[in-house]
Amino acid sequence: MTPLPDCYCPADGTRVAARSLAWCCPVCRGPLDLDFAPTPAPLKSLGGRVNSMWRYAETLPLATPSFSLGEGRTPLVPLKNGISAKLDFLLPTLSFKDRGAVLLAELAQRLEPRQVVADSSGNAGTSIAAYCARAALPCTVYVPEGTSPEKIEQISAYRARVQVVDGDREAAASAAREVADEPDVFYASHVFNPYFLHGTKTYAHELWEDLGGRLPDVLVLPVGNGTLLLGAALAVAELYTSGLIDRRPALYAVQAAAVAPLAHAWEEGADDLAEDAATPVAPTFAEGVAIPRPPRARQILRAVRDSGGTFLTVTEDQIRHAQQDLASQGLYVEPTGVVGWAAVREGLLGARSAVVPLCGAGLKTGLAGGPGNP
Image (cartoon, rainbow, N blue to C red; front, top):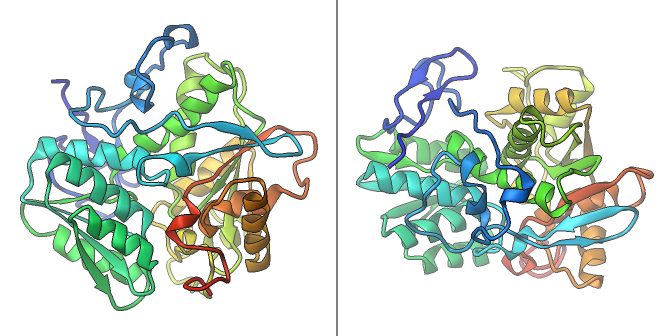
């Protein structure tokens, strides 16, 4: 079995041993990165490989899975104005989070904890619960009150324990982290654990392959905790450093205007969120990106800045209209999953090519403004 790479703290350089159950930097309590710099395989060598994200084995820190649900290789379809959509809502649990959850469950299986815990507004929880079921790992998922009943039902169907926490998304995270500090517990955090990012990066590796060895001018990405954007940035760096692309796409990060701490920091030219900054939080259809203080804020802002990209925000009306627009084209996507399309569907990008991810299925939430999603 290939040795696991060590983790390190990008803020202060503290190193964490590969087989440790520590979920954050022991010094600053910040998220960890992986000491792993792979070289992707050239395009011509991918033919005939397994038709899942595991075809990019050279880029994955756990390259030989002991279980899989066939995750990855989602379709790319044209929309309009030179923009295409990648249908990540067609992954096994109906969201893009499967790309990272399979790596977290694979890692947990190798570390053999007594239990796995996670926190989520829904989609990460459903993915982690599913892959823990596949790996026969006991799992508890902490969710905030108001989480979609469909998502809670899905988590429960995988035989995971659901713990509904009074309060918001941050309250659910705090509850999970208290348990994560106990001995012999694996915290399957899609935010703090860097393995998750190395799973989500396969989104961009697939785009590169599907577009014949290139990437579009712009990658439009929804951002709450930023796991898809940071994964995409990892893949772009790997492809560029290896000489497999000759230019980097701009990263356009999209937040709901109701909860947009990163967009506000961007407007102010800040490198990070101010420690004492109070982020306005209003109800939003896009609950999956309603994160007032994302732990990887500094990394997200830097990735967008380094790419020549920007931040965009969308209103509740724009989210609702974008969901209806996609449904009229045969694509039923949850409100969080449409924010990228909401931001650019009116021709903002001009003649530039772009791809938006459709991240979660509409069956998970229903229509924005409809019953159960007012």
